Length: 612
Image (tube, rainbow, N blue to C red; front, side):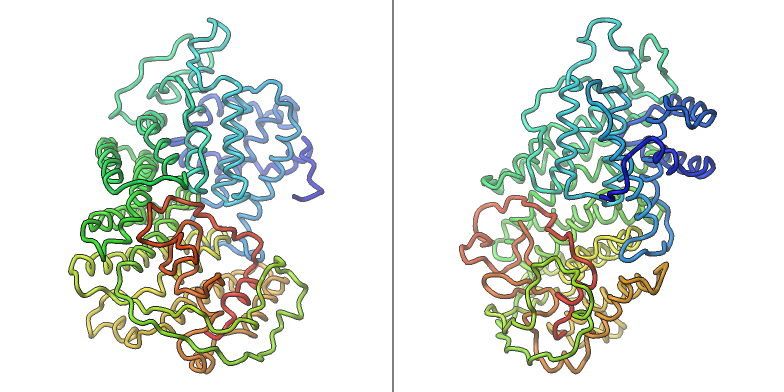
């Protein structure tokens, strides 16, 4: 945190952009966000907006100024463009991060004695701002859980009609219903993505479903809320009502799958699969243009569970035909997830791709499934690589490493031989599913790359995804195609080189888009890349691989073809057999590995600076 930021009213007002700029950002916010998670009431907002600009320095309006700043932060990276970079992050994300830090400081200075509607609106907006800009993600589960507890303390989980008449207005009752569901959805998704228990598990709540009404159907002066519109009539509140129908099942599944002691049988996976598909098929088919994002989010919320449920058994499909349906279900779920995000990006909508981690999770999960269902040639025992005496300028730079990076020069040959995966030949269905998956994986890498380039974060995840895709066989191509000629030489070295080229291309784009090409980050990265850049000579000298090569992560047993991630078996079991693919159900673990604290130069020198 910047020690110079105090979160004072003066700092808030000084950070607020010109009104014309705010006008655009606010319009974009209501267009992209207030059709899913409901936080603000649009007519009330615009009335207060007009009053604010009449006297923007009135201390009574300071909380509204913070709301405006958070809206600016939320929408900062939602337009498609080649943003310039400041180091390894984009200028827009850096600006959003500074705004979020300021607003956080201001919010912390406020009393919690009276948790008003505005208090919860600020908390929700701050949470959305952080998540959509990928800021403070390691604190997201804690922050969203705290917000649930604050809502419980204020009684949001109970039916507001139980309160004495006149104690709370009809308007506030309706807004609290909306906010309660929004808070639950934000917390549940955080729980699922981190692999940690949800605070909603076994939580009693009887808050009624919010009315399916447009915002202009009621106001702060309304003595009663009009009758709810039919489900097939889309309003900006429609998402909340439909989402609530599946919430209890999703909470139950998140608790089940995030529990390391869960032993879920295949029949159980099929049982929950059927329930999820019933709910997917029951989703409305709104034709309103505003319904694009709500429909996508409703589908993603349910479909992500199919991938998690079936993955342990999909990995066994090659050796047990009984599990072939699970393989098919995972391919279908991953394909739908990636296609949903791809279609939204094609329409210029970056909201969900920036906000959620579906693409990386689906891509890494599917790559494991394909790896286990491919035929593996080998084992290939690697020899120790020749000592690399190449001088590196990285050592001459100020030490920016996180302090726990291994000395790659001290690594010897891996103890575990590598396996070269090829498409299965014995089963036409398995081969078809693997081939289809390879095309999906390439799309997932492309979609995630757009997130990386728009935000300027997620480099390690992009590398893991590129390495995972690169270490698999290529999709079949006609003998006359360019892809066939390019992939004619298919071995571990050529696959590693291809994965490295993908990351190198992205890195050069980051360098080319630097606002200041002479900044310390750009100089450090260029020096590091130049000193440890791959060369054909070094690649040939090492034969088939090296311990410090692409995708290698030091483990107790040596090096595998894939980097190991928590909760993701990669084919090389641990010494205790805990990752045995034939063992019990592999419950969902933390799919957000500790990737913080790694700058690109650190990462390049450590993982890409070997002999590939």
